[in-house]
Image (cartoon, rainbow, N blue to C red; front, side):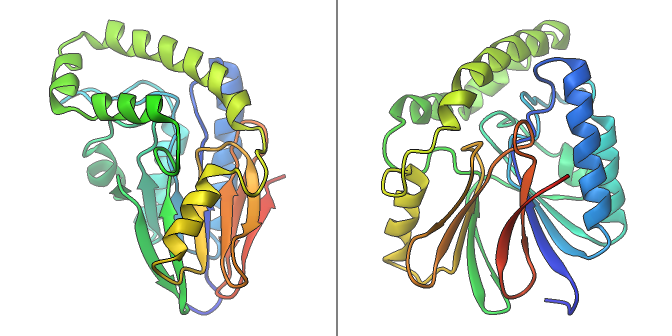
Length: 249
């Protein structure tokens, strides 16, 4: 790492819900946070579900969120590496973000070594035991034929319909996701423990749960869940030695 620089992580903005006004307020907070951390950020990781729904047609992207998109482009133009993970709500990202915004887009988990500390990073959806219904749905939504068929729906109808059902899904699952299950029952912590049996990771960083969590899964390894920017406004920062979960105010 560059001396004096830091690595930042955040997740789950779900911009677009519950309405334009509330979403804009959250977007402004995200942009203000990105502006502030740009002073000492070496890299920024955005771990998915930036939008409550996102679909890229060949020549069309969803309306709105220009302040966030503009800020990300500004960060990458300044030389800061921005890494975006595809979440379960913005599953249909294609090449718009890499081409227009200059970000790195990841669909699978990645490993990164910073100052000798090994990170395992992913949005978190589909990991761990259970949740078979979602895993089946993700497989269907990731299917090339399904995506090909959806793109032929006119955007005015297709995006509107998708936003409606995505919003309903978010409303139903968000409160369920944000309930702490206990250190032994948290499924992403269980997943991390299994991965730790095969490789000596120092940190597991996930989103998806909408719940800020720090769980020591061994004497030398910590699982961090980033929470969200709907209720918690939390993020993590690595200064080269420690990974801390903080709240933006």
